[in-house]
Length: 75
Image (cartoon, rainbow, N blue to C red):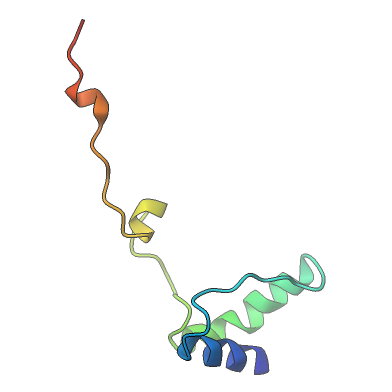
C-alpha cells in the first residue's frame, strides 16, 4: 500500500517521528486507515502492537513524582 510505503520512507529517513491524520470522511476514513495501513506498519515494525505500561506516564517513560502529601507535617 502506497500510504504505508510513504510513512515508512519518511519515518526511516528521519523526516517524521509521528503523524497527524486528517481522514477525508469520518468515521469511515479513519477506520479504513486503522484496518488497512496500521497492520502493514506493525508488520514492518514501525507501529507498536501493544503497550508495556498501564499508564500514560509509563508509556512516555516518565518517573512517578514524589507525593508531596507524605512529607507534610500534621497540624
